[in-house]
Length: 440
Image (cartoon, rainbow, N blue to C red; front, top):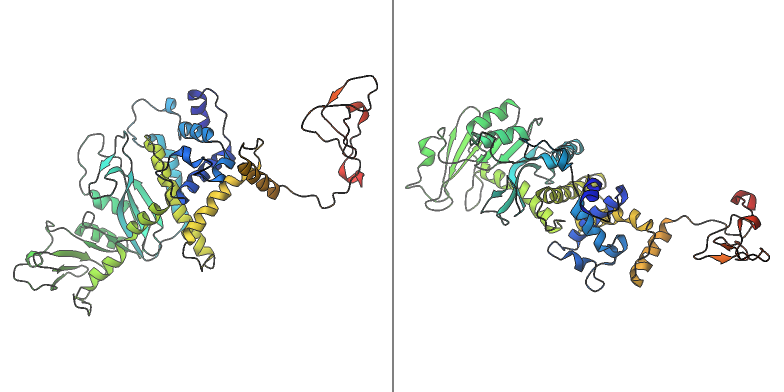
């Protein structure tokens, strides 16, 4: 689809292949490694402020052309009236989210929360979330493994339905869809998702729930809502056969309510603030998605764009790099164990591995001497070296320019082949082709 859009929109477009597309993705990843999210693209290719690997991979003009042309579907083939707001990115998104679940099985504790992909361009389902750092962007529901912050399943929120009616019990619906297929896990979520009906449904699926809850829930007893006259750091518990609710007062006038199907006893920690065990477990598990956002934001490959599919593609790359790092360290725990920046080294190696094949097959050397030497070294390291370079009769080789045949008497015949022994120009009438096995 990128080649199709390039032929339509760019006059001197040259089709990309798989190696060049991987190289383009590798440059995006390397830009994130060097923390160049807000840096101008032109400065990345500058000889003063840029990196040599960018100039060695492709020109800045080619990079801009691919960025302009990259597409994930055929715009002209879309139906005019389509209810799927994610249509331009639907195929890639479904393939990718399906692959995430195949590669990893979460541990016993998972966390459900929301993400915001920063984006300020035109989009029918762009959200405004004032408590997030970016405030404007695309909202993504995510379920992550608490121990590793592996993004196991994601769901993009595309706004209200076609009828325009607000969805009821949205938090419950999101949690049940994201945790479908899990058994024996403890689900942690905040008060937007937590409800009594959700906890019962998760119990039917053999999962437990720990989460904060809002005061307006009708199933809460009045004793938990009353804070007047209560001592600071005090706790009040309420029980059913399968549920435990707790009201904790961290300071005067503040009431924290939690619901749990994991705990059965009114346990309180031996510390000055006397926090219940439910709150301790909630604090330990609630940051699974937040840790993912923090890790992704450190070396994000996001670039400035006005097209939401491209912004979503950048987020896809960031999540994939984090998940790949989790899988790689699980397979090889001893890899770079002494380093404190293992994830940065992993991302850098992935980016360099993606651009290396495109560098080695580059035909024209860059103008910069330093960059040209970098390309030559990469090509020399990738090309096989002959074990026995002994001279012998072999097929004629091609020089850089045309020469005159030294054996043609009275004729000015221009040729492009020379003898491998003496280096004189030879035409096809005065040359002999022989394979390397017979030459020995």
